[in-house]
Image (cartoon, rainbow, N blue to C red; front, side, top):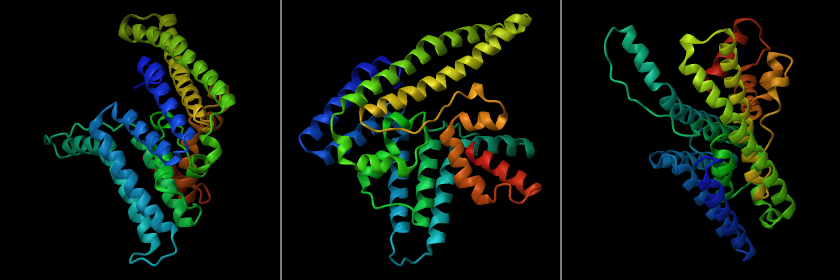
Length: 322
């Protein structure tokens, strides 16, 4: 279910919006949150219901591990060991779907044999909800998480506006919003602003990105016969397609979330205005960069130890980041 699809704009989003605030108006806050979790899981399952158990198992597993890490009770395993097991389980799940066929293919070439590929399809948003929950586990171990009930945690992981295309949200900026009673009240200002931002994003996607996509597709289909100017036009069309596609989806995600009084973090900041590669990296998919820096690159040592160690840290960061 795409943000720019008719079923999302005219059926799913209005229905979820009306039911959610109706339940809150009747002071059924818990039921409203449970409904929003169910709606988000339905939104996810719409793509491929086969992968629904993956996000459910991941959610339950990480919540249990995170709660255990944040409590002061004594456990059989040390908390550091439990954290290591939790992170390893998440990375194995992600790595299995991302790299299993790649590994088998290369092993087959290396051994000069023909090994059967698994033909795995990467489950939608698996990187996003895996990274979010790894950050939650690490912060639980550090004692930087507060007590939140399961519904708030489930919404943090599954909230449909950010589930598919990001941003990669942090528990500290999401769960307090879901826990705040004020956010369960109908807010005309947020609704107006949310609809405005969503409309801008829809325009970017449908009018600009999709138009450039058509031009790029024509160029790629005739790649062998393009002249100099046509080749440049095709390249630029694809460049602008990517730009406005991601920018549009980001705006539609922010706008959709704001209808429910939830503010998502900025994830896209005019990256083509960047003056350097580093500046571009800071502007494009901001929340992914934040996660990779705070939870992989810096814990590995960052660039404190120069030379080979720094390059190893960079390689590991980008390998895990996909």
